[in-house]
Image 1 (tube, helix red, strand yellow):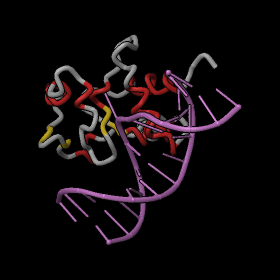
Image 2 (cartoon, rainbow, N blue to C red):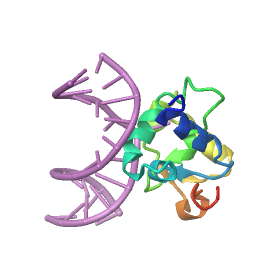
Image 3 (cartoon, rainbow, N blue to C red):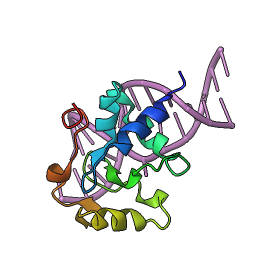
Length: 109
DNA sequence: TGGTTGACGAGGT
DNA sequence: CACCTCGCCAACC
């Protein structure tokens, strides 16, 4: 398999439209591996070196928490990018998360 | 080959 | 609402 799990994660992440966010679990489920949500986040560690660019800042955990912000440089960059796209972030949490949430399983059809 | 690692998720206290 | 514990799965050393 040339398209490793990582590559698949990147593919889905790149499909996330601006102003929208999704969760690691949702991506994992979209790939058919619902239980490997942790792997999705792990894959994102390579997002920084992945090409084309992967909007990792649009991926948060199931609670809308910016758990991966500390992997950015600086950590506050993640929130900056999100707010720049119209996503309100308060206390490391996405405002109206349920509204801006992008479900790859339904929106991607 | 086997054990450890995680940017997680759900459930319980 | 906040914090803790357990479970899952693929990649990495």
